[in-house]
Amino acid sequence: MSELIADLVRSQPVAHSLHQGLYNSPEVFARDMDCIFGRYWVLAGHQSSAPNPGDWFLHEMADESVIIVRGKDMQLRAFANVCRHRGSRICRDSSGHGSRLICPYHGWVYELDGRLAAARLMPADFDVSSHGLKPTHIEVVEGLVFISIADKPLSMNRVRASITAAVGPYGWSSARVAHRETYPFTANWKLAVENYLECYHCAPAHPEYSRLHSAEKPIERVAKLNEAMEARTRALGIKVGPIDYHVDSEIDEQPFVGRRYSLYDGACTGSEDGRPVAPLMGAFTDYDGGVTSLLFAPSSFFIAYADHGVLYRFIPHTPMTSSLEVIWLVNGNAREGVDYDLEKLVWMWRVTSKADKRIVEDNQLGVNSRFYEPGPYAPMEARVAAWTEWYLKEIA
Ligand code: FES
Ligand SMILES: [Fe+2]
Image (cartoon, rainbow, N blue to C red; front, side):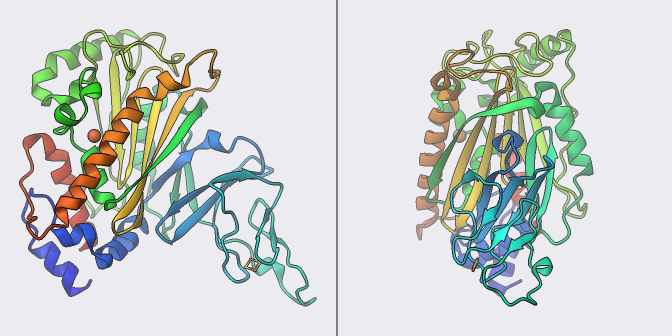
């Protein structure tokens, strides 16, 4: 670890926002790419984005690009998007389809399982078998596709069980992506993650969300509401959870944190007016007015309502540029325009994501000032405090 990073970690005040350098220095960003994104599993998308053999989509972050492709045997595989000839990117669009993957530079051809099938005009003794695409680790849990670019990936055992317990009842393994939208923003990826970890900002920044979601209030003030919601969930015969939470970096596992909370005033789901927006999912035969909200560390969030799901992928590009991809899930049988209106489905999290982009960019601008100094977290920001503590341990 460099002197700069050691100094920043050592002098970081407890339960305060991070030092400026942790949000804007290229050295810290390189460290993040090694210690965080090079070590942890990250959500790449949902399996329904590549339903048929030959379908593929990309997962990109900083210098890395991974192709997730469905093989002829229906297996999803992941490969570094790096040609084994001279290293060109092979796939350039964010998704596509083909019976093989062909490098646009000199035309090397790869099978969907990564084997090199043909390399034009190479000598007769050229060994195609040792020039297949480099695989990366991939796991599919409840339809969610996770990628790890680590040499040796962390165990997913505990978190796999937690994800299944938390979103299994919502039927995400048979869900379908209804829509995806990308929001580029000019800020360090950590500012965006921190923003998503707290709802202290919800009341001032998200009036639309706060009208419906009780997470905008301290948890002890809405305990009765949450109890009533849990009773409704039980009455439907649905058991959600338990959801693990651990930030102990001694354990070589993926941190995963979640909570359930109630919507206000008989609202059914996270829509503009709280009314249903899509057919019920999974085990839900009625609305319980509950929201399951999860963080899959370091940078992926999931929100489950009875009739739709929302996935968040915060993607680092450079020290001060990132993007947020929002993916909306619906019941696998739901037809757009018949069973749901896309504009109504995406309304809540589009308006909220636009506001968050603004908030996070303003935050970075202030953090870059010579007058910035780390400020104290409020009690409603306890999860941010725990997350930054975990983060500091990881980079140290
Ligand atoms: S770099 Fe891909 S074929 Fe040459
Ligand atoms: Fe927000």
